[in-house]
Every structure is written in structure tokens, then in C-alpha cells.
Length: 68
Image (tube, rainbow, N blue to C red; front, top):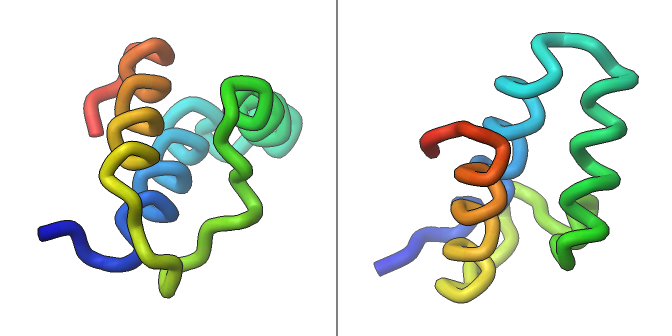
């Protein structure tokens, strides 16, 4: 079972790990995710999760060289 907020948590983890606190890189990562079809700002900790989107976000993280 997928809990609410998992997509948000993965997105935040990817942004944090890749940007290492650099806001310019963080915005760049968000833009890349948007271009890959993930509406970053749409997801909150209370957002219901869709297993398809969860997998897509995990695949994007993998493309960035991250394990989430």
C-alpha cells in the first residue's frame, strides 16, 4: 500500500541530494522534472500517491544517479 506524500518525499529527496543546498541547481532539477512530466509543485505531504507517478519519479531519480 502506498501512503500519502510518498511522491512529495521522493521529489524533495532528489532535489536535496542533487542540489546540495544550491538554489540554482534546485530550480534546475525542478525544471528537469517538470520537463519529464512531473508537476513538482502539485505534490504536497498530504497528496494522495499514484503508483504510476511514484515509479516515474523513482525512474527520474535513477536517471540522476540517485537511489530513493
